[in-house]
Length: 239
Ligand SMILES: [Zn+2]
Image (tube, rainbow, N blue to C red; front, side, top):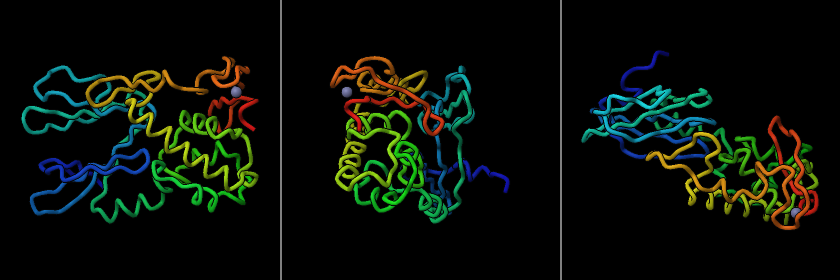
């Protein structure tokens, strides 16, 4: 179906912002009071940047620009095109789409993880990255949470106890909260809407630190490819 101006919220008023996992929904209301949503997925390299609509120079790799009131503008940039925009013509459509994802990671519980994974032979790192299990955990925060929970990333889910699931869920929530409070992790080019870099990359305990000493016990951190992603863990602290 072709995308219309209304789908892109042109001439609409922003009614609300919603988020589930890694997806941000800009909910707009048009002149006939119809609500629709545009979902922004930043992917690995996308940014939403606030600026001035009168600035002639647009940020590099701008795929969309919304001109807002009072000379403001919002640009969606995505150099490597892993992110994207998705149109939902009603809030029901949006909720239907989000119901296919797992619960938001900031609210995840050990009971939920145990109930969906306790019989699974999958490796726990791969399960945490699966957005239909829980929504919002990526590679960095999976490794950081597993380190704090003392669980090896390659452990089969069915071997994890309910106490370990509870500890893991609590660490997922705390790692994500810490990262949000620190403005996220800037590895290459991530910046927030005002152009500020994140500060959480300075607090990573394992991610990106392969072969360096463990912050807790001093052992050399190990790494391997797991679920197609570089995975780092401590061979002593994680069992
Ligand atoms: Zn250690």
